[in-house]
Length: 224
Image (cartoon, rainbow, N blue to C red; front, side):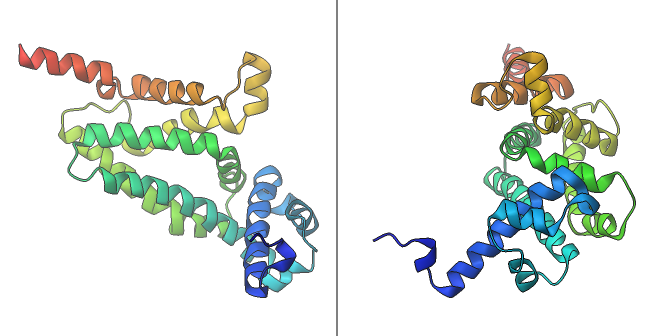
């Protein structure tokens, strides 16, 4: 009933090897950047022969792009799936729940922020490709959501683009620096309840009017 990896069909083995290489590359690039990452280290992380890399990827940059597509694709899929499920819901609720999903994603993928930081610290053709392919569409979506909040009378604490970067830092740093966070606080940053509390704190600090408690108070006041 259960086949070992060696018993898989060639196409299945090839697809699995590619997936393992992409995931290993993502973590290696996140840890060491493009220049510092080696194909030998990536193959070692993936537990495959180094010769498998040129079989699946023509260049190191092609492997980097596949890693970027993978993590950004997962992030966009999670956010877009949430947004589709909230069609017709008011912007305040949508933004609150999407930001909560962002926190959960950052906790599940701590290397996501590390990967983005490694590439974002210096100008390069890779960064230009990343911005055009993945970052700019996300920025447009977030700015549109913030504009809807303003239309609903929510006052933003900063200009929308600056606010986006403030949120990214506040959401992701705790997980990207998880060993330091644990050392200083003696707390597990990935504890499920702690992640949910972190999401609630983000909403309360940046968008107090979106906090469920605040929204409940406003509803009660309006009904009096």
